[in-house]
Amino acid sequence: FGKFQEYDYLIKVVLIGDAAVGKSSLLLKYIDGTFDDTYVCTIGVDFKIKSLILDTKRIKLQVWDTAGQERFKPITKCYFRGSHGCVVLFDITNKQSYNNVRLWIKDYQENNTVDSAENIVIIGNKADKEDDRQVTVEEGLFLAESVNASYLETSAKSGEGVGEAFESIAKVVLRNM
Ligand code: GDP
Image 1: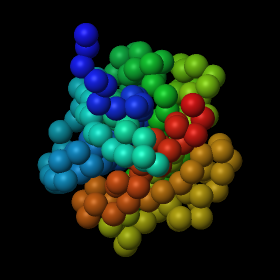
Image 2 (image 1 turned 135 degrees about the vertical axis):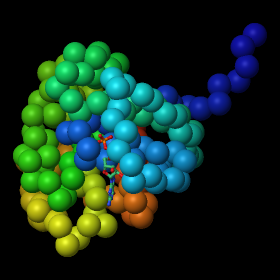
Image 3 (image 1 turned 180 degrees about the vertical axis):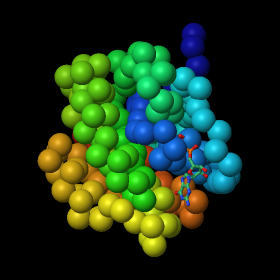
């Protein structure tokens, strides 16, 4: 007889957004609590697991980190299908990465089942670089509202908002289960 299950829910989410917005850094900070200034691009996909407790429910959160480059798009799309939700990241110091959020969401929704398509959290990362900010908090909130998602800002460097970001996507997925 199998052993007792260690969790109540297995939640799979994908981390998407342009290259260099900080997807890998955010995930690393969340999982290991570390930050590295050197840029190593993700090849295809990578995933990490974190256990958390939300409203007494034991959650096993599986986060798929995808590569932002065009050439990896066919690979990353396969992972959209099996996921329950997505975290779309942009860099608050890079307006283009903000403008591309809608395209990422469209990509995600077109490649996912209807019941998971609405589980989206938008993150404005690099919030520690306030002096270089190109996207205001209001613009972030406005975009999120227009696609029925929530908006949060994070810094993978300082750790600000990181735990909240992943908890918030887990909560959205749980709510719609
Ligand atoms: P990815 O391609 O989206 O996975 O981006 P990376 O995680 O590789 O990050 C790209 C670059 O941005 C790296 O040099 C990181 O050190 C840097 N970076 C990522 N997040 C932050 C952040 O919150 N603040 C600052 N200052 N730099 C960051």
